Image (cartoon, rainbow, N blue to C red; front, side, top):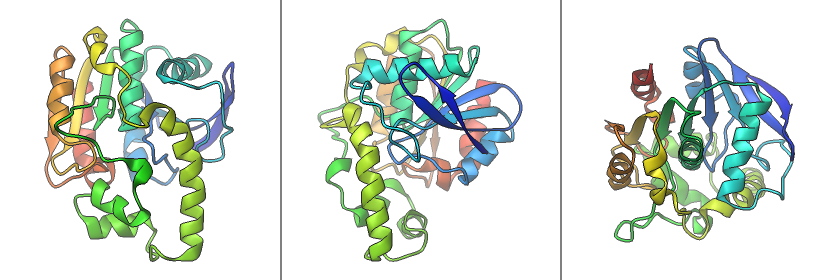
Length: 258
């Protein structure tokens, strides 16, 4: 995957690109993305992948013009235009799934195929989503992974949670990233998407880990009910980071989009 830059009306956008095949726009979650993610390598084995970083993520510039859900949605359509993509497959994970669903709802004739991997965007009072903004670093693996021990090793790249250099780096990058993500996720990740899901006309595949402790699989049924014809693929022994824990199964599910 190559890291490149494309210019939108508001801000230069850094994005990863790689692979051949049908164009696919991948939208990352609140944790961001890195070039070495093995899931991207699998995506690039089948599709021509474009994976933009939201402003404030990685080495990208911040963008104060992005203030609310509509701004985030239109920004990503600006990215599609800047990349000269025509009806790409859109796939999003977690926060990225929330944005992808909004894109498909606001422009239903411009999205034919949509993959939502444990998307945020809905709120069920009886099943509250944990507050990422109040979560301590050592609690993230328990929320994100089915295999907590393996997840913790991935999360910290094998160092201890109290390693001062790792902790400093994490806290700085996390504050910068969540400063952007918080505009649509804080205090709760609900911006009215439930009332717009009916507008989605794209062929939609929902992918969910059965052990997701961040966004419960209960939400999968809510999305399935809201999007006409949506198909749900539940993946056993996988948490919220199902793309890391079960990448082959996620790819098989997305393959149903054609």
